[in-house]
Image 1 (tube, rainbow, N blue to C red):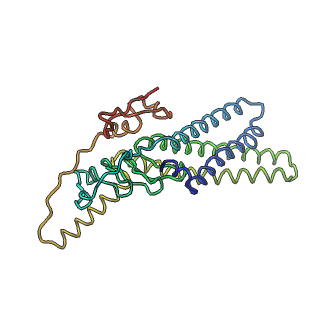
Image 2 (tube, helix red, strand yellow):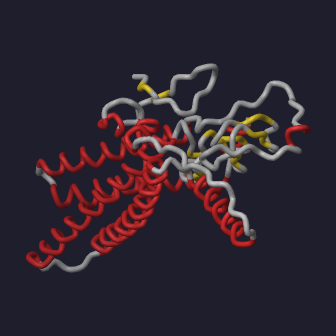
Image 3 (cartoon, rainbow, N blue to C red):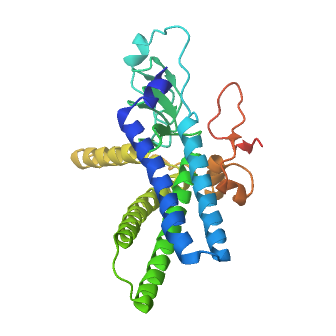
Amino acid sequence: MAFLRCRRDPCGIICLILTYFSVFYADYVVIQYVLIPAYAGSLWCTLHGSVFNLILFLLLACHSKAVFSDPGMVPLPDTAIDFSDLRSQSSRMNDRGCEGWTVCSHCETYRPPRAHHCRVCQRCIRRMDHHCPWINNCVGELNQKYFIQFLFYTGMASLYSLMLVVSAWVWRIRNERDSDEEETPSKHLIVAHYIILLVESILFGVFVMVIFYDQLVSIITDETPIEQMRNRLMIKDRGSTSSSSATQPPHQPPHTRKPKLALLREVFGRGSVFCWLLPLHSSPPTVGGITYSSLPDYDV
């Protein structure tokens, strides 16, 4: 299956290994070199350790859901379909500027509106956002929620570990000034772990927060990055056509945008806002197989 071939993507596998290694390394450094030396025998050690590991648990849970969930692959037909007549026709465009029901030349099947072909997964994905090597999967209609949750908890873990490392480093510097102990190899090792974790936290934190913001903007504007690029090209083509032609193109009324809360609920579900933070399964109700603008209900 194309879905399994996607799993064997070398870049995606390397990114998965790097992701899990970074998470477990951060947990090891925070517990072994930050909390135990700085907060040994204190309630703060248990509290910070529990909260940090809870964040990491939710991070891994959301990441696993994003990796192993179906992003919204368009089913392949059981028998081959002849699309020779349809290929000669121009694709229909709706009022959003996106393609309507079209034929994918790679999958040899019909694909619904807002579905695009992924060259890595080798399948068409409903409301495809992009293919992310960090989850070795596409980000689409059915797993975008888990991907955004993964970004959120990665940002929280990065910020939390950054705060803990800085506080432990300050505590260590003050203790060394008071005790006047000589430099030992173990101290250099601890400082090296601190620096590595600081760099990891800053890099991953900034990276995921930028993507997190981009994902929210994409949901609120109701346009995936592919649709944004396509609409910009259409506007550019219209501008060049109107400047070279004396006649103006017919005016197309803009599509009616949904409320922002409704757009968010299409991704995260109808449940409480607090449920949006948990990797709960939600599935949109289907009428005759597939619907594309329904609000999902949580299936607990």
